Image 1 (cartoon, rainbow, N blue to C red):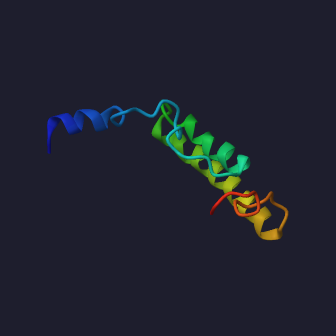
Image 2: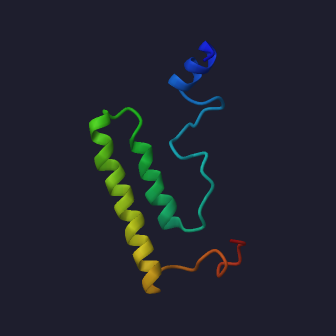
Length: 84
């Protein structure tokens, strides 16, 4: 493996991320985007704290999916005039 590759992967990807998740496209659902933005709390935290953050984000996403399954969620991409 190339030393340059090891150096880049140890820090951040070429091009950088800035805030965690900033390379992710918007989902069309602000609740989902807000939940995923919670992952920005991971950098700089000890690994043992990652589980709690990941569980919180997962729980929020699971709740959103539950609301959508019950028909209580906002409009889906097709209903909002966006392509799926």
